[in-house]
Length: 397
Image (tube, rainbow, N blue to C red):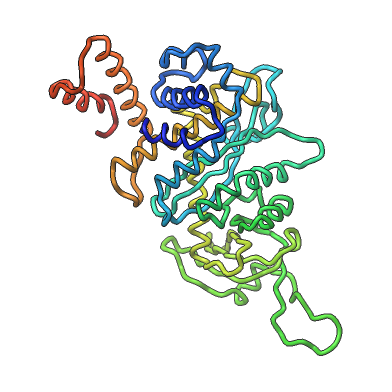
């Protein structure tokens, strides 16, 4: 993987050699360290000083372009991908950290004081795996809502998304706000999301023109209990869920939507969930597939927090936090790309980041040990021992 990283870094002509050298070493150490990813601990596994980490963490780096180039190389031009956006809470102590505020913590089920990072990811639908594109720390601004800030995050990486042939952005119900949907759609993307079960929607009028006055646009409010016959039934899923679809108008989003209603009986009561897309021609089952694939972004947050140091930045500066968060997610991308290359498959498979982290540490330790002992991997027995011990302690070889 090191040659690929160096090739991608060399392609970034705006960077100078010292920063390329640091970034290559940083991404490598984030895949091998044990414990917390603090400056002092990372220095123990890299040979770089704490001061060097602190200094270079404040330098800007184009993580979006690096990850886009990595994904183009890994997935290929024929990949079927969508974009996904979500935010994650990051605990942070102290009082001087940039961006410190109240954010919703899903594990606690309540707002807590800390930091938040908003991540734009790419989900490969064939392998059902998410890869990070770029994360941005949520920094509140007095004249802009958070929905507008999240939309800005999408617009910033829009050129990278277009290079990956992505046209749809999947998100959860929180993002179903006009201040998010409108600018994202204006940039040429379609939004796939979820609505409240009591969402205010209107039927589109499909009758003939009366011959005078303004043409009628709407045909009453959608009532999900009484108007089931006005939906087009698509199919029934294996778990007893019926799928219905129709084009409707959303007054809150000020646009026509492709609505998909998932309906099921809970006892004697009928319940439903509402998915939508601003792409009114999108197939109902494809819409469901896109929305389900969105959940893969949660595994990015989980694995980066557990294995690559997402929440361990000890700096209080927003520039350093940005570097730590994105370098952590980029290191995770590299591990997933190496897993894909080793298996030589593009379909869905199980990826154990814990095993890859153990393997990378074993190889790092053996490289240091063999250098101290003057052993060369050109020796057949040494090379066999290296290959065997690389998988020592992994969940599955």
